[in-house]
Length: 433
Image (tube, rainbow, N blue to C red):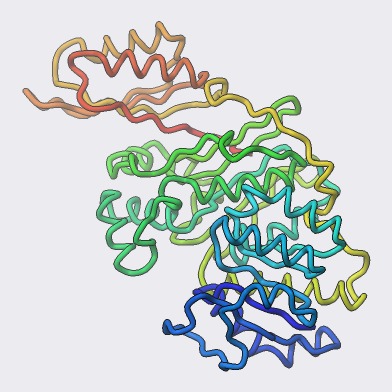
């Protein structure tokens, strides 16, 4: 079995290290040789953590895709194009594909999966969600018989590290982000991570596997963590909660909820204890109930482990050692249904509201009045000691309310002369699943 890597970056280096360093063990498990035959990249001069013999290196990706001796193409270049073109060309040439490219599959997964089924080749994508957590395999195989009503969790390590550090050290978002960038835990451009886009890509894939539903990426309501303040972390702790960036999907039968946003969860929930750059994905099935899958969600070697495991599975299949071939999703991509997404304005949740107000008599009553007139019931209020002539934060915890009503109320409150800045609203999930 001969494999080629396209994209010799961080993850590509990890795959090279694992395949070459474990070649004897992998071949023993397989009962045949598993060889890294080619490594393709447009820049072969940049220093990498792992060295590759020159005879394996090439800039000619097209030649790799046409090489009849290559059985598996491992796409690790990232992005949408030319990754999509290369993957489809590899499939058309009868080659199996392994990828860690969650953006590619979120946008073009259905097309790629259908092409693979038509060509009779495998597509492995375990590394696209959760790094080394085998959540794709779990949904496709281990729990394929269960009917899932929810999939949710912490799906981006960078944002989780930032929020965890803010909570532990009382520092603000900008300061923690800058430190994370300096240490290499956050990208120079952190947009995909801190704005929730990366988590939305992963949620789109999990919805296909868990619910058999295809959602356009732009149908997933997505918010990031830039507006979460150290003050919100402190209030959350006081109220018995932790703030996490959660990706949440719930199957209501006629509609699907799909959303990514900062969320308050109870401090005794297992997800609240997932700190640092770790990931955790929870499932709720009719038969199994709630289960959680935890581990390193990114990084060179955790991701490389998932990639090479997919290569090994595909090799077993090609050699007739792994039983009947599974479709990439565990079922035909043609069976994916179009999902009707519940508009975010229709979603019902409890809320944390932080409103900064000038220290004037009657302001609390005005705010409470606007909330009441919008049909929002207040469960509790926290107001700090008065600071004459200054401003004070008022914190409200609401009972369940519809999002559109909450937004209407917040807009009215923000227009009051005594209110400073923009009110902060964070959804509370007492039981995400």
